[in-house]
Length: 473
Image (cartoon, rainbow, N blue to C red):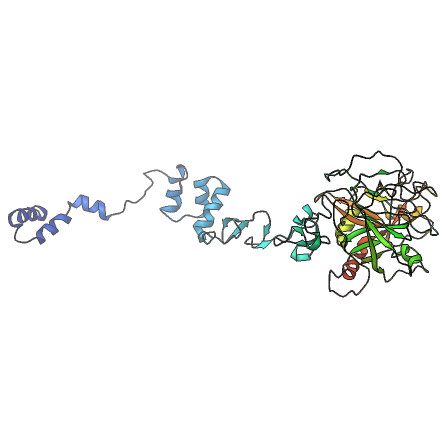
């Protein structure tokens, strides 16, 4: 009797005497079955050459260690082979999830690569790609300043402050809830100026906007030169400077206490007093929106030297004794930093010039506020057209053969451009001078406002940074 059968007999006879026999019996198996459990089934070539069989990953590389050629036979595809081989040889390099910011990891032999989502770069997608001001304005609501490797810095126009998100702007101070440079038509102010040796030109571009029309649409009649009458309230940052009941220049509202104008307007007013009128439209009618504000102090640019050149650095700031009450007819225009203003000026879009100046050379002045659209003129064309020198602090705008121009009385007023992304109007120039008005082959000349941005902010107390230079190169 075999040992297995004898165990069974002993267990059946004496199971109550010794339970240990039961345990021994339960693990014993017949020899063939026991061998099947203890011995691993070895793979063999089934009596034929293995090379004749189709590639199989399990047979080639999992049951035995394979080389790259054998793995290639199994996959029959180079890309799939290398994906497998990268993990087979040295493990999965992506197991630790090295790619940051939701980057996708791909394993390779001895290395990995990360495919980064938009906005990120670096070996592990750890670096944020710097924003660019020329792409969607850097995400800024008003204007964008490049900051090298730091990307961009968003800034806001005068009377606005930057919100916590770092890109949006909101009104501040007395200007709260007054959209100074929002989607309203350009707001410029041009008034008659004191007679000077040259006729002055102003150009500003006019645009259709979503600004509410406050009065019945006016009939287009008398012009700046080639322009037309604006709707009342269409250009609320336009003011005029008045001395002894006589309008002598225009200007633009920067905030409730400051107006910007041309420095040459102040040459004959060095000692006399004058005031600024905001909210004006028809000079022959009292419309209820007018505000007369006395000038407390005047600040011509420190480099302005009229005896040397009456129109170089032709810019001045006027500080008012009492603040302007903002309304639909009186509000400030936006002012941007140098790079922003330069880009906007050369954007290819026309600008708007406005004022109450003469309707033609040596003609009568306008009763109502006028505006005209004019394009920027390239510097070489500007210089070639002029009998006088055009400095780097000036630029030309207008048409060589079209009767559209600013004229005497418009000096000091704004040259403004609409920023399409924000639908806001920005001051890009100041009416300065020209040869007659709308003369063939001639253009209007304007003060290049972008060179004076830091000086303006410094004088207005908007920055405490000391100025090394009074102009930006």
